[in-house]
Amino acid sequence: MFMYRELEKIAAENINAMIGINRLNQIVICSLLAAEFLEIPVDKILGKDIWQIIPNDSLPDIRDSERIEFNHFCRVGTKMFIASRMPYQDDHGHVSGAVAFLQDTEEFNELKVRVNTLEEVRILLSAIINSTQDAISVVDENGLGLIINPAYTRLTGLTANDVIGKPPTVDIAEGESMHMQVLNTRLPVKGVCMKVGPKRKEVIVNVAPIIVSGQLRGTVGVLHDISEIHRLSEELERAKRLIRHLEAKYTFSDIVGDSEAIKATIEQARRAAVTPATVLLCGESGTGKELFAHAIHRSSERQKGQFIRVNCSALAESLLESELFGYVEGAFTGAKRGGKAGLFEEADGGTIFLDEIGEISLNLQAKLLRVLQEREIVKVGDNRPLNLDVRVITATNVNLEAELRAGRFREDLYYRLNVIPVFIPPLRQRRDDIPLLVHHLIGSFNQEYGRCVERVSDEALQILMEYHWPGNVRELENILGRAIINMRIGETVIELQHIPFLSLANANYPEVGFVNSVQSSVAKEEGGFEGLQRQWERAILLVTLQRNGGNKMKTAQELKMSIRNLYYKLERHALI
Image (cartoon, rainbow, N blue to C red; front, side, top):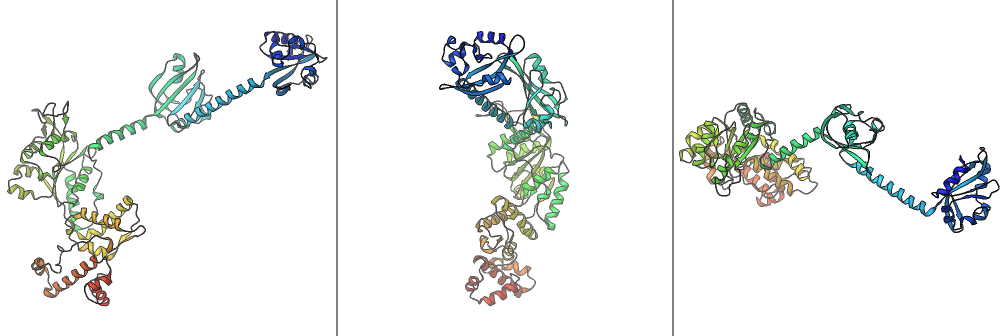
């Protein structure tokens, strides 16, 4: 409680607007600031009864009850004030009066606006700190925890209760506190490695001082998860590789088929994969040679190395040589400054897959032979050999032996490539795999097109089984994709009308009108003329049924027979 003499000194300093009364309710204390608020001179206020100046003011009651009153609104004329009131004592310690400290409401409103603005800034800053993915830790000038964000909790496993108000070493599992170092030196630190939290998470820490009006008020630290940085770096490196090269992503388990022909090929390729020998993949276009190349690389000891795919028929000879072997600076007009590494060099320690090997020129064949013999390359424009460790897999859909006899392929290169030949059978030689392939491809197209196709009807599957598939699995994929696109949304079964028209001219039996195939069919048909007749009849039914999209009424009309007779023949040939 204030003494009267103390109040007189405060009033004389004119820092506060204050007015006080004695036991007779007379005003005995009035600062100049209070007089300005009341717009009455000080000499007109002193000695007056308080209620004359401020009607019904509660100062007498505050004095008599010896209580304190904070921040109460009061009106003087047309003005509003905020007043805090309390009793005061004389020199003997007895309550001898009461004093009121006045504050203009305009000033109060200004302060309120400032407080609200500061609160909005605080909320905004909290939202920013809490929403960032960087782990943030703030301590005060004494090093005690002040603020952490959710990212900090996710990284360290420590909550606000574990950190706020605690020393800065509470989260350190290994290392020294960078908060304390910055508090001592006032200098920021960057890139410090340490382990934090109960799980000893490896992090990189950056800490900076917080200086306000020249005074050190604390420090702020940002923590980065090293494992996340490593993961992102690896992803970036992989992305850079995949921009130019196709990563080997298929294994032998991705090769669909259960026929004896494909199982024998897979077994042969598996045996080749565990050796360092050069592999030659032979097969028609669309049989899956590249799929086998992927699988061989993934099953070899080089599976962690690069898998570089080169389509030899897609590049001109001049470009192909520089792409394969690289070049030095100034090798030719337009050569890149500093030269360029070739694909063989980039495949060092891994595998290079040369597709369509039968298309390269004799000149390039000679250079490729040197790579296989000497295990070294010479860049375009250079004469220095560069030793490499590269496994070579080649593929072709042409008969290299015929090319060799025609003088378009080098004999010595052929024997270097043909160390382990793997023949991939065409689809017509493994028809038993067609149902498995259809099921697998339908699943892939469902994901790609957002469909829910369940199966192929028996009639449509029969057409697919009878077709000769000159384009092999690639053609089957194309036909099924077009069929699914032709289906209405909601349809779940691929019917005959969905499948594009397929000519059965080269199937295992002759078609009606295909006279050229009669002789071969007669030789194969043990039933003689009656057997040929059954084949012709079955072929006619299949082709006409497909041409009419599976519509049996149209098929019967086109063949000029009754619908009943058509059903009889379809049943006889197991087509329904």
